[in-house]
Image 1: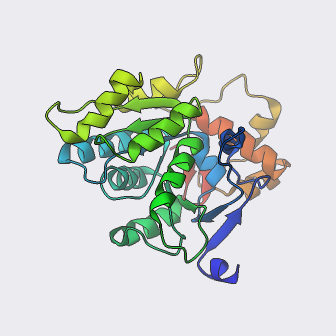
Image 2: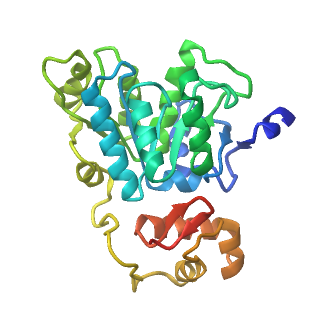
Image 3: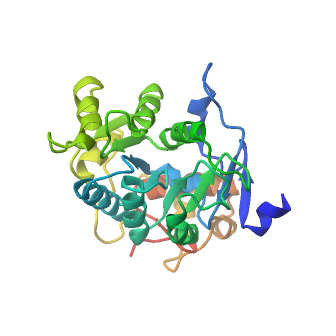
Length: 300
């Protein structure tokens, strides 16, 4: 545990305030539940995943695939949607870098959080830790084994309400993530590509055989994951909704424009940490607050 603390890594287990509620999908009979997650970074894992989308795809991505992944991730992050992916080269890396340029992102790894894999993403992982988080079920010092990537994929699918596959070959690991998303009844989406590209075969199979939603932009993705009757946050000046419950309204009043951590906001409004986290999640989903390096702030 001391090695983890020295590396700035914490252990989050079921029942902790930071534990994502969506991981209950792994508790079904026959499922592979998670007993704990190692987390590195200044972001709050639960809050980051409240309004999130997974973007996955081929490591050997084409220029087209990386361009589309980066555009989707950037536009989603600009709409207060956190991008979750696996930290690999190709589509994952393009999505993480674009989302990080706007806000936080979540990197789900198949190794210990003190092990930079792939090594070429060491700088990216260090940058992500400043505003987002890196997550793994593997302990400190653990190097990745082939089966660990498939186990990791179920976490990517479970943490989010929807998964977008940007590029995937016929035997791509991204299709494994897609299968987990379907099993958990999460929104499954795919980006169409050139019919001449081997990296589009998997996506076209998802569209044709798996009935995945066809998406080409952030608006398409939001339409797939936004519950009926809930509109995504609208750009523009800050506006208080008249139908906020009293507890959530008190939390909103305690959020400064300069930003503050969840615990500070909870203390200001007299709420418990769990109550503040719940209200901040609802407020973020409605576009009334946004994440920042210090925690939460009113939208600029």
